[in-house]
Image (cartoon, rainbow, N blue to C red):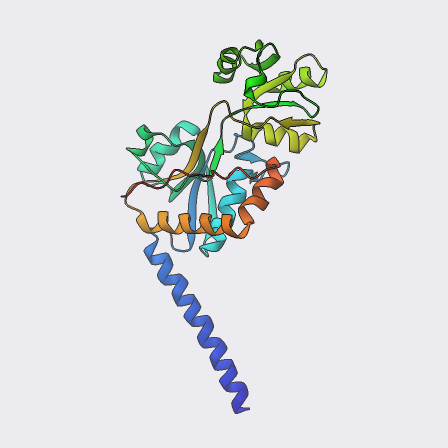
Length: 265
């Protein structure tokens, strides 16, 4: 009986000690509400942030941020916000952070703090699995689709392709299914989602025509929260969780090989 009491006391002490550690961590994370991670997301930007058939928000941002929140022992509270209001709301302290896939630029780094870049995207060629386009250097003379007036359309022309413009990428993909064009230039993350989600017989050709890294954003003055999110992301990449949750959605691991790091605050 005495031994059972000792064991029970040890377990209870461990649990209480663990809870104290988490509570102490929460106090240091500059959160708006203890135990909650209130995060802005756009909600209509597949595959980053989108509503499923059940109406719930899902996508890459939610998949990655749910795991981050879990590792910080916090409840994730997504707040759907219009794209042009995200950074404004962030600076007004309406959210703890934003998980929207926002390009990291020197100009934006002046007004908000970025976590270490969590994803890399950019222009890549999507083509049939048996394509003879092996790199961007092979685009010359090929008929390539892109969204009208987009950066990707300009890249096709710059690489010597015969450009075919489309009002949307879905139409370009359908034309490629019908063998009317040799390839499509589009965002690499969107390409991966289209191929993976629709089981298309296409591949992404190795090599980017343009590249950009994206990061979670914070208002200035939250160094402990930024550090905690950075650690969670690094641990996820190290133990394979990041690759697992992202590949399930887009078919590949989009982690930057040389991520843009958080600037000193």
